[in-house]
Image (cartoon, rainbow, N blue to C red; front, side, top):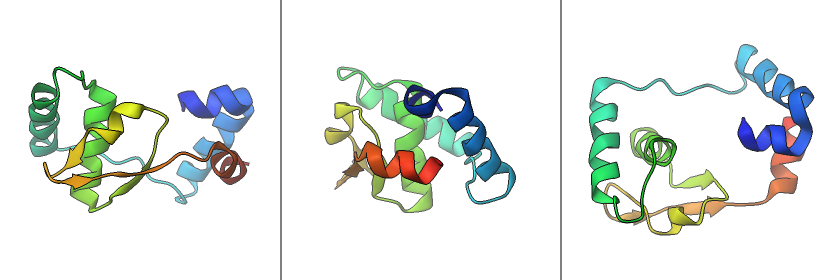
Length: 101
């Protein structure tokens, strides 16, 4: 939501919420095992450092079997899914902005 706000303010955030409400996008709920994994990742990457938002994205990618994510955070070049697989970063803001309209 932060990035969406930077691109188009509240009106673009509202559009994103509409996609969520209509079921086009889903917010991934976390479970206890995922929260433990987030803590483990934050400890593993403590020298980077990894914050909770980063850990939640990596954990969601692991659980959902995804290897491609959108981020502007260069730390994701360091992070690995299941401690082995490199993430493919999707960094094209134009496509994201078009998607959210």
